[in-house]
Length: 615
Ligand SMILES: CCCCCCCC/C=C\CCCCCCCC(=O)SCCNC(=O)CCNC(=O)[C@H](O)C(C)(C)COP(=O)(O)OP(=O)(O)OC[C@H]1O[C@@H](n2cnc3c(N)ncnc32)[C@H](O)[C@@H]1OP(=O)(O)O
Ligand SMILES: Cc1cc2nc3c(=O)[nH]c(=O)nc-3n(C[C@H](O)[C@H](O)[C@H](O)COP(=O)(O)OP(=O)(O)OC[C@H]3O[C@@H](n4cnc5c(N)ncnc54)[C@H](O)[C@@H]3O)c2cc1C
Image (cartoon, rainbow, N blue to C red):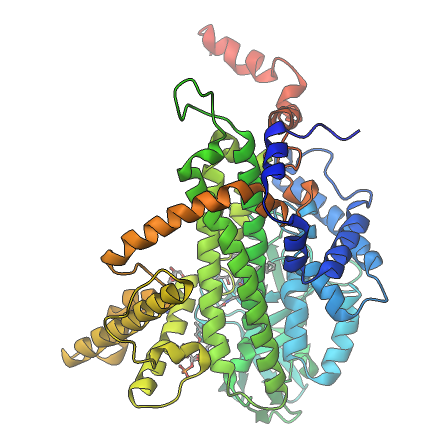
């Protein structure tokens, strides 16, 4: 018999003014997609051995990892078996697009995540047809487990500064991989330490002493039978982190490690047997895997933010605290407008990121299809947009997830709420796949070029066209959606224009272009984001905003119910559908190993002698 649902949540659900199932279907991309997702979740989550007997927060660092590998094996087998052979690739992708299935199993991400998130995409995007056929067969059947090894101890952002070398030896038709310094050690790649046995390594290619730029190489670094590191390979784990503590991030050093010529992934650039180097049509195609993951991250943020606001909104409907009016009893904290302000932006942002992710994915698919035909025209725009959206969505999601946590008071600080772990996952995304400031500056680089083109009368791409609209200086302001968008366009135009004016001022003062860029870089980053609008407009917008909060209030629980996360995926004492928060907090607390006995051994060993002055 299912547990009784909290009365306040029942009332909230009765008050809801729209059809929750309809919104769920819309978010999934149709009723069939919802059905497929739920069917997949039912199948996988009913698999034995997927969940923890002891909450993983009570395991040691080593036990956490070993437990995660145990679960990863069960999980990926269950996912494979759950795949419906009659489904198209697209239907399968739709079923997983919004599902955070893995989050039900791994609170801190999976030791296999890099295999799926980067190793396979790197093969798909960087291998030639023959290499793709061979490596995709092995990788998709999980015969090998891979990762993406680009970042080094000394370099993460500056790819052209990577120190790992790959020197071609035409006599043996091999590449010699070497880490010339400690800072050249690959450092950070997920799964690298003890899980994977292959990786795509980004290394500086040299042929006859000449630099041929950064190229991708597929490298085996552990024996497939014994899992022992191969000769010339130094391996290890980088240690405990804020989050991602079951992703097994590691380090790898090469000591004159030899690999056959066909291990350089040669879709874009090639090395012939005699050492002839055939350049890529565009050296940045080598960075393609990162563009792909930045696109995926936008959707990932939408889902993670939806999970956090679901937990916080449901908790805010159940939690009663303080007095709004004398003798009126303690209100639901969701009735405080400050609480609505903290949480409703998160609901709206998650929907905005979901729609943005769909738009960006379509753009990515179009540009990738064009690249296959040799048309690179829209690659720079895709890069600039992917940089901006990855940076903006990860920054906003981190802020909004942290705000969801603090809006739940002390219980939000409990690991059993799962809000701290969600924060750990999303805040990492501000750094990985391109540190946000660096990516924003990449976007700014494109904006400055576009404004220069606009000022010389050239046509701009659709996403940059706002820079060529001669926006009247006294835009008639109204708080219609169109008026607000026009306001933002005017602000955005002004930000780019002011950053550019600032750079020109520094150049006139005698600074070189690089120093002028650096001096203006705070403005350049701001030009890539949005900031405030002029004073007079704020009052009008504020009234509209507060009025909107009141309109959303009766639908808040319905809006998060529509994300349709099952309790296992929320994995939270505060966010369960039935709202039995206090019982769950107590149930989880009693699982702490410290509660196994009333008096801990440290009393007799340390406390008692200390309190009796005997220590
Ligand atoms: C779990 C919860 C969350 C959910 C998320 C779900 C999804 C994820 C799933 C699961 C978990 C995943 C786990 C973690 C994964 C993390 C993995 C990693 O971190 S892998 C390492 C990433 N490292 C970087 O990204 C380095 C960043 N640095 C760079 O990209 C470059 O160094 C850059 C762009 C900053 C500078 O590169 P330059 O020095 O070669 O280029 P310049 O000299 O600046 O020139 C720039 C020119 O190049 C073009 N350009 C640069 N990059 C481009 C690109 N990628 N494509 C096209 N053009 C590009 C630009 O448009 C510009 O063009 P013009 O000269 O202005 O015309
Ligand atoms: C959880 C996690 C998982 C990861 N997984 C992987 C993985 O699987 N594979 C992999 O290869 N890497 C991985 N990374 C590494 C990640 O890609 C790098 O940390 C990231 O690219 C940033 O590089 P960095 O750490 O060297 O920082 P740095 O580049 O040293 O940045 C440090 C500071 O310098 C600033 N800075 C740097 N360059 C500029 C500039 N040009 N202009 C202005 N400011 C600048 C940055 O804004 C930042 O504030 C992971 C990282 C994390 C946190």
